[in-house]
Length: 111
Image (cartoon, rainbow, N blue to C red; front, side, top):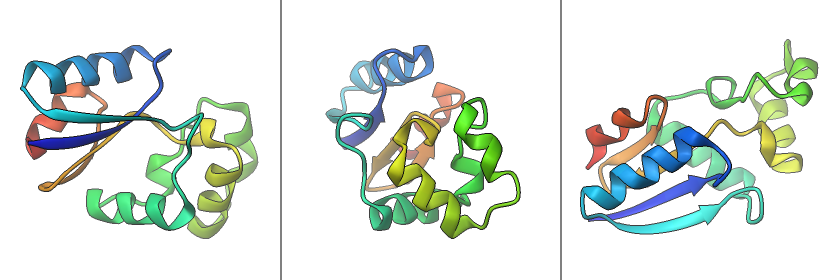
């Protein structure tokens, strides 16, 4: 099974999710989204496939997220593309769908 993980190697949940994918035998493509951020369209498609809103995918612990408290989903997507640290991680995509790996075990739903 092929899987793509939007990964931050400094994040423990992201590392745990990557290990889970590797342990499951997935053919994993790793996208370090801080170095190679997804496009706005790709990010919107990932959230749609996951059944999430951009607000649900916002990393609220980041300082930049505070300014987005009352923002629209479009504004949140624009902010995420401009500053990818605002993207909650890790996002995992397989042919069965997309899941946010929080907790990492959630990605088992799409393996």
